[in-house]
Length: 165
Image 1 (cartoon, helix red, strand yellow):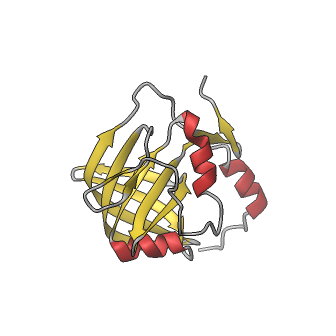
Image 2 (image 1 turned 90 degrees about the horizontal axis):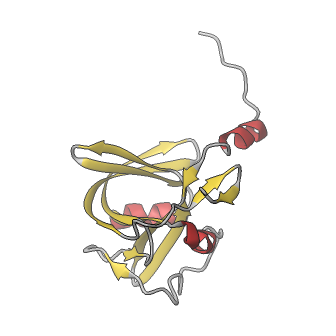
């Protein structure tokens, strides 16, 4: 079998940015501190049993914290919450005070549910798989809730925040 030709990484990044993706925040607890990070790589894997996958940068403290805790909450952001995607998408943000000023509620495992979102899913991590630079965390949905059904989702397309209207 021959080796496939090398793919230009910059061109791949440009073209893969043409995927329209919904933005979400993954939260967990590390000791007494909340950890939250913006993600755009998540997937509904199965309805039976309800299972989701979240991709986190493999060398990140978020991936380490979620794996260590064994659970997390995936909160799907609404269009008017792009500021939260920016807030939790900043590399090397301090662990202390990440959720300051937000009236969060909690899953049964203690993970933060962001207010005003579309929906949330509490996950118990069953598997972790390395894939290139990322850690794929696969978890059974153990709780979920609906938020604002009248809101549009927070979407990123071509590297920019987008409005569906």
